[in-house]
Length: 349
Image (cartoon, rainbow, N blue to C red; front, side, top):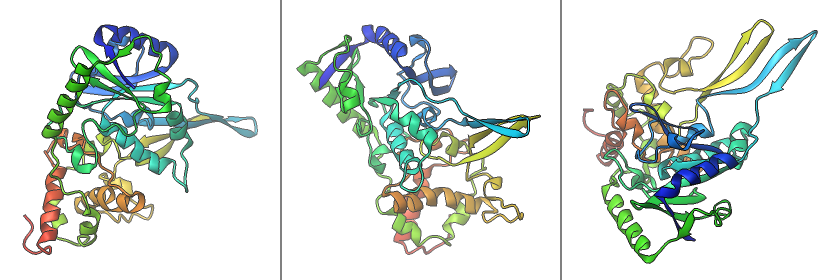
């Protein structure tokens, strides 16, 4: 259905969502730091920033999450389940790249061999309201990875900012449940024409030149390439790119205990950290930045597409935008393609 939501009604629309659901939406914590968080008041919501600093995956796969608690009671131990997701949830204002990333993580956490109950419970209870990207940044390359600034796959409802209103599309059964929302009005032909214009302009701004198609085959021939000797030199191993990546899903688990009580917590981890692959024996199969940088790129563009049929990158550009040493993954992929085209000959730059 083609509907619209006037911006003068947005505050009341948000109040209704907060009353009926746990609402997660973009919010500004401090200057320059924006996240998806649980919203208590409509004024917290910020739908104007093109891409939040931290990705929407945190609503399903938190940076730090208690899995269960335990305590000693007499001669027996007692395990207490972590708090369950009780209310239905709304994820509002996620850009298409973030929504595609949630679908990618879902392939890992709800596969045939393993189901992560913590992720799955949140995902089942969540309705996703996507938001089109009218003004992609220069670091965005979502169209190179199979998406786009108005890619609707994964959204239950989809909003597009028309200026004085949001164009609203109901895409799934969950989305259709909002058909009778009192703040939605029927869109008119002028709204449809403006929607087309905005989409065309946005697509022209996105970098579609990054050579992703078939890259896993090229990387197969580059395991021992001198390419890795040079490409890692700029990286300082801070892990920012992995922590802000919407598809990275590595985690570590730790027990936090005091006296007779404790809890098991999982936290985001990064393959760029030396300790990530350190074995108990003291051996580290990825002892330098060369091997760790190779692992990051190979996982996203070789191992993942072989296992799941697509690259584990949505072109959001966060790893480029926030890297303190300006490591540009697009340049790495272009350079890898050039080296492959030349038969991996010549010196590394």
